[in-house]
Length: 234
Image (tube, rainbow, N blue to C red; front, side, top):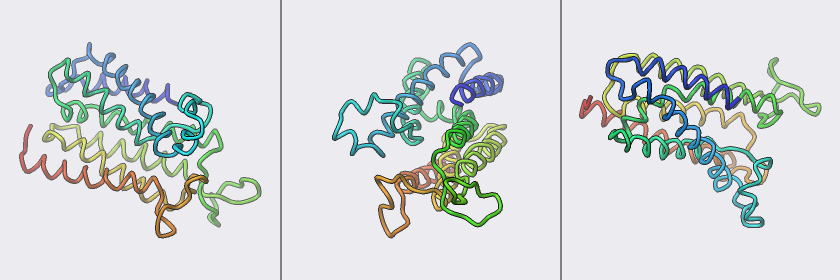
């Protein structure tokens, strides 16, 4: 699924690089995707370990390298990609937001493929449900929350951001829309997901780690969009 995501990102980046205002030229696309791949993989694993697996890390520091245990964190991958494209942007003399505005439309389909991978792997099931589309797991009908995420955070978010970025927008606006869109979708879906067993709910009997990590995304994204249109910096 990661491979599908990177291939699609490469194809989309090649297409987007043909826009007259694109900060990335077609010959630079492969290097950009390579940097982003490193950011996703390293950041995703580090993020999972520190956000969700810190208890295991305290017991076994080598847990960080046990990639068959635990998983990857979107929020860690996001930070990893931002650091990676910032480093590559320095070589091209572009600032962070110029780079993330270009990269943001390339991300959602990869997220969607990743959630389909969670579904295939039989992990991250949702809460019990009586809906007719529930899946029977160990005799209990559960929400296919992985597919909800694939649809909302993946395919719907992709179309929203791709269509929005078809014309030139103020700097930071596309990045802001991605953060708001992903944040709102993820916050909503967390009501149907079952939190990690070793963390459970963190507050009020319903607040999850995913929601805690997502709320700042929504706020920062809204701030970026408001700032972008106030300054209208294109």
